[in-house]
Amino acid sequence: MKIAVAGTGYVGLITGVCLAEMGYDVVCSDIREEKVLLLQSGCAPIFEPGLDSMLKRNLDAGRLLFTTDPELAYKNAELIFIAVGTPENPDGTANLDHVYEAAYTIGLCIDKDSIICTKSTVPVGTNERIKEIIRSVKPAHLEIQTVSTPEFLREGNAMYDFFYGDRIIIGTESEEAAKIVEQVFLPLKIPLIKTDTRSAEMIKYASNAFLATKISFINEIAAICDKVGANIEEVAFGIGKDRRIGPQFLQAGIGYGGSCFPKDTKALVQIAGNVEHQFELLEAVIKINIRQQLLAVQKAKELFGSLEGLRVAVLGLSFKPDTDDIREAASITILKALLAEGASVIAYDPVAISNARRVFGDEIEFTADIQTAISGAELSLIATEWDHIKYLPLEKYVQLMANPVIIDGRNCYSLKDVSKYPITYISIGRSALHPEQAQQHTRPGPNMKGRYDETITSILSD
Ligand code: UGA
Image (cartoon, rainbow, N blue to C red; front, side, top):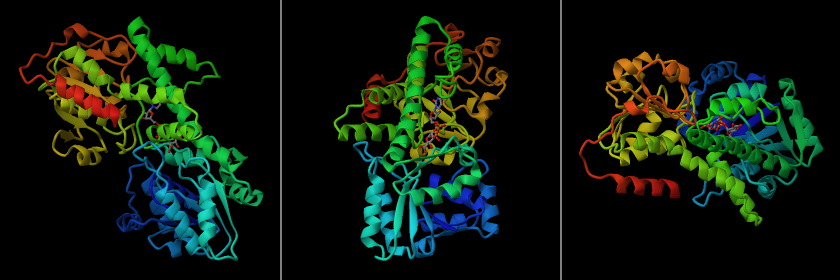
């Protein structure tokens, strides 16, 4: 069976490479020539553990092709996955231009009956529109069916999630198409759920919205823990033991980021609004997350007074570990706020520096060496829980910082371990350690308060 994949972004590339690994003949198409050339040479344009070797193996085996030629991709294909981006419109709705362009091109190029599966995250009703577009341009004698197959893989764990995911959703009104898609994924032995198209589209948004809700919920509990002297880790462990709640996604911190939760939560609020339902719960989740992303800077201000001229090491730039993706990362919000406060910033990340440099240029210093970052820093602010950060011996902060202060936005260290060192340690939803040791920062400079407040207002209204 020949399978084609439209789009070599995160979802498209992982889908193409993993389907080839399963033994299928796969052609991935993308309109960006540069990217296709890179992929043809065996290099992945994204950092994803395990991707490079699987990509090379399947290219060498001749099961995987990359092309900018849509005819080469879609001719003779029985199954075509649409996996192009659905970025956010200024009003929060999902932009479907790329999806509809892909559908149109597929309609023009197919030369046999085919099944079109949509993996892109799309609002309810989009698959029906995809079917209409393809039908309006395809050769009249050909039959096509559409299937909604939403994707649930996590960046950084994408290959694992493809092969060991919790479920595969097959949403279609065509029993025949459902059977064929089922056969394709059957070897993975992942539970397959067959449903109607609209429910499948909704399952994707509802899943991401629920996970985001869990995160904002635990962050609210952490805020209260801070005030009443409880420990959020003990609380999360205690509630997570209830099987109805579950232990996952209860890690309090400086909020969720990435290319999915922020975008999909806003899109679902819009989808609800379009049918005159105000999704108040999800609106609150979004609002809490914005506040959470700014929490570390707020804590720094409480501790130091002014941040003007303060040497701050921001540890971690990617929106989570094991990825170089900085889209909607808490670190970006933090860096903007620190710069607005007049801090002097050095940022550490093992893989995301080039992406961050594109946003900040030389406004901040970058280093891929964590010890260089914290050397001489007056504050180390942890934004991402990379292993390189978690396993940095605490002595290093004592050796390399004159008066060590850590604001840990991801609760990387245990309070017991930190308490053995003369470190001022502020984390999320847990008691502060040695806050009295931090020195108020009274270096003279212009009063930045106005600028900071302006920046916060602009970040909040973005
Ligand atoms: C998320 C979903 O987990 C995937 O199932 C989905 O396929 C994907 O979006 C998508 O729609 O494409 P991803 O964005 O890769 O995956 O990242 P997650 O691991 O879900 O983390 C998202 C954010 O939540 C990160 O910033 C992470 O730091 C934060 N998070 C996660 C917390 O703050 N606390 C937690 O307990 C868990």
